[in-house]
Image (tube, rainbow over all chains, first blue to last red; front, side, top):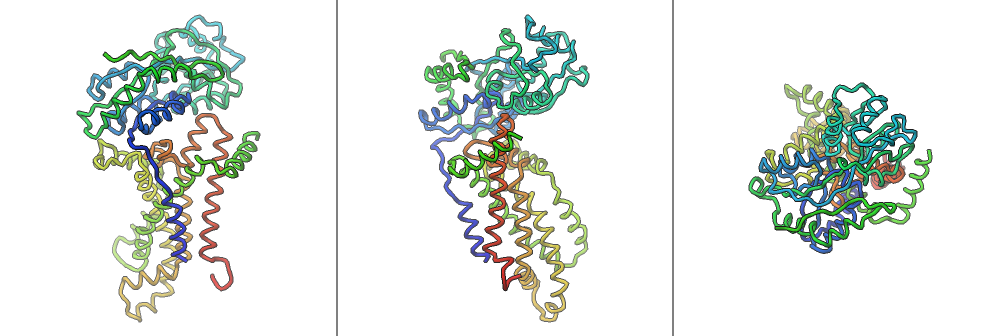
Length: 270
Length: 234
């Protein structure tokens, strides 16, 4: 009896284990992954470079922490101040801008705080605070969360002192959108995650277009002087590909429902 | 309600069409949990037998601790394994973080107390029956343990299945130490968490139904192979 079980178990356990020639690990933000662009780029990278990029999908704060600990080879995130600190502290070799998309304000389609008619992003936030309309915050130290906090500061408001209409959920973009959908609350999201989100419920895109809402993604190779196991040659190969005209075409032509999501803006090397 | 039906029908089609990605993820789930279970049993079963036959000063405390650890929070186990395996942690040189091996280690730690506690319970009862006989035969400690383990093999199977159930449905630890990497460390439970995050409830539910079906199938196959509940076997 036992022998048969062992046989069945071992058959189930050791089914194929195929992998590409080269493998590297990269930490990316949930918003980048939820946009669906990764599903377009990764197969092309594997085809062109014979390189399998394993993505760890986390918030910007955790992505940079993974880079600091040397648990990934490169980081692709969107929070400029934190990225520059990462490089200046010596954890990354340099910061290379790749592309940008933009943040949008999502809220109940009835729009009780009337942010659709706001002139600026800060104006929209002031309207929400004034109406004390339910607002869901990521609250997870991600790039989107940091952006939201900086916008509240620019609007002259202190997010720490808000009443219980301000709900920090401490979750990724998708989970936070689910929460907002369930509570009919306002939320700051990146456009890509919003367009790809499957559970929109009574929510609608209410405000976008203010230049302060642009969201720059940058590529940060982890410093091999601190972590000798980092695959610097593969990291450099990937950087060259991500800043190439081929990547530019793929990124610029990526659309959801006819809307362009990302704008490639990497500068040529040199 | 709509999501539920959609999930059911999507699960049905995914299974019927043997969707390549689904098959891969399901087998990865099975591979990791079964590996963890086999390793856990190799530790837990002899430990349980030893606790049944040996009398020593801290025995009661060890058993109580083992029982308490059945409720070990997976996410805490994951975090501890993560910190140990991280490149900046004590075992960082092994480079095991975010690999299936790390997931197996974490699940093994979660499963051991559960299997050991359940196994110990039935071994202790059997030991009461066998005690006088084995003592009078004057067998060695090793022989006592082997006899107990063999004669209670069906009860031990139940212990192992309980361990399997805990492992296959677990998400907290493997999400932390595996990182949910596509084609590498993504298993059914972490895929469900991911799809829920995307708001794709129907697909998440479909994967959930596949997970439940898988657990049931494994249990049925084990019982069938073990010929339990049949004539001539108890």
